[in-house]
Image (cartoon, rainbow, N blue to C red; front, side):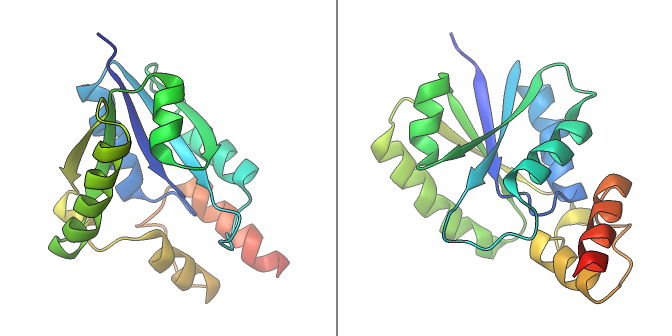
Length: 161
């Protein structure tokens, strides 16, 4: 049986909350693909190439985790790579309604791929990529929310603007 799990997101930028889910998923599933979604209509701070490079560096210590990117529907990408599970993180109860809606749609489109929800650890429950971007854009210290390589990338990005 195939036990490939996908953990998908924009990861713009990657936070400690994201990495906690990667770590936990890597312990639950024999193979995890961290899949960065490419959304042509969304304006990202980092290019997809920059985000993939950062995530690959951050996930290098996991022998069962790979990093890829995709465009289109996550469920189609999951079918393409033979995934069995989609891993989704929940920060708060407000996330659940939206995530459940996505899980139901994914189940309808790809009934052989299940969604597994992992609640974030309390210490990461308020951290979001948009919060990290906002603080960093004003020169604030985001070192307790994102790993050093991401903090440095944010500093370079905002210094160039």
